[in-house]
Image: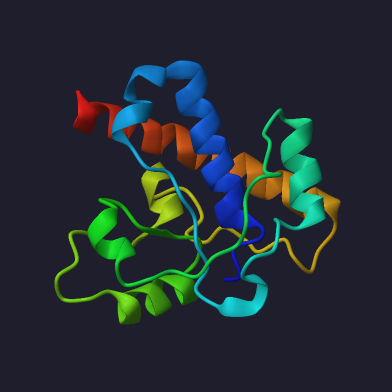
Length: 151
């Protein structure tokens, strides 16, 4: 939604995964995150998500929230939503000339996974850790998909 919890954490996790496990592909991919609502544009990730990510060795400190732009659908080959509401919103933003169709992030995990990454914003610290667990699993699946496509 506002690009301060789930999506910047996924961006940080995926970027870290590529830097550690497949740095040879970093010059061929763009990893970014954006929100569907302008609530927090220009702000850093939520301090609770920042702390939870830092405990896992992921640095979110340089990230700033931004809003999805129609041009993102031409620049990126994959656009993911963290939940059904954001997926619906992304579909309304997608121009006819888009090169990709928005997908649910957790669909990367197959049918047994939950569809939505829960928004930890209104919950406790444990919710941020749970979200990072889900995002980490999704990032593993996404990296595997991207490496096959790049190879």
